[in-house]
Length: 357
Ligand SMILES: [Zn+2]
Ligand SMILES: [Zn+2]
Image (cartoon, rainbow, N blue to C red; front, side, top):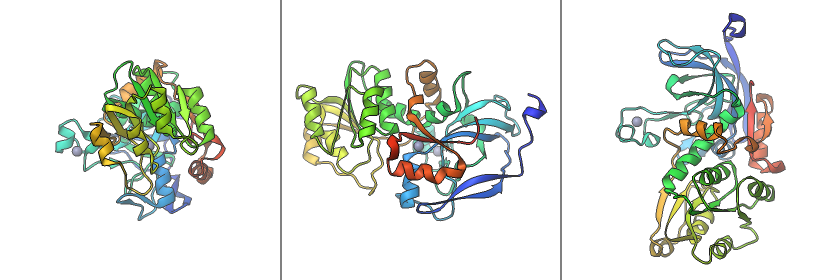
């Protein structure tokens, strides 16, 4: 790579800081320097996640509270801008997707194969760690996954929610030919359905209150999509499965009544996977219902080492992530992106902030 196509990074950069509820402001901040084992990334595409919107609207998720101004953003792709000492498997100029969680690697959870539960994790864009709604960021080299030729930076950013979807289907132990319900047709729900299809689901039923999202889900992946504001969605799914219920029911809406609906539409002995983040940080299930059905209940916490599989699913055309990126923004109008996602405006599915190609 010639020096002209790899200019020295500038001293300062533009960053979008969340100061408080519904208050994002641009500021000029220093460009960080990569230490040993780290790389400097020139950020390309960043998806606006539902969890970012929780911070934007509520100022926190559970005990993760925004106390100081923070840069959000964790679903991203980037170009390698500089290598720290000792980094050998990456090259300046490479387009990479980036796993946003830095685990300690030494604790009981890391050592027993559950790095997603590491209590020492540093996660991009989660207080107090800054994320990537900014021009440059430093990341450990192991978290950077080079994208195959032809894969776009936008697809690279969508690998993060796709990773959550892969982890969700892993937890469900879905078997080929089984039936699935996915409650909520936001980006994660849609990708969960897409991975379920790739994994061999024979029927996929979805529920979604927003009309544009129901239409999108029908054309994108679902066999049938029901409206929880107009229909008894559990009765609809039970009718569609001759009263048996689905093998796997996945809650990806984060709504108050969707966990219970998910439990009602799953079969005896089936699996219920809870993936959504409820707004009021509580969850209601009728004890007799889930006990008499003998359900297996799984909670989704981020993901494990799934980026290589996510890249292969997209590269092979088994999951099409591109249609989900429905609206594009820049750092200058990032607040508009958050308002549109928060208000489900204009049929928005995934807002992507593009900083570079
Ligand atoms: Zn996310
Ligand atoms: Zn750990």
